[in-house]
Length: 87
Image (tube, rainbow, N blue to C red):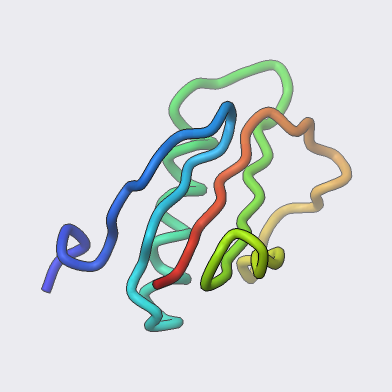
């Protein structure tokens, strides 16, 4: 089973992307790592791009999700944010 079967892009809201994902924690971590890599590595800017993640079963239950090994967030400018919703 590939990512196509486990991820559904729902919408973009300003600087946020909303996905529906499989609830498997290992898959969520893997997918979020890939999203972070894509969003921060597409273009080199003078300021680093920071990507935040939130997860939850619905919009009202979203909580921050931190990937292990993320860089020091205080040295980065907030230019992009991704919101992930698990089904």
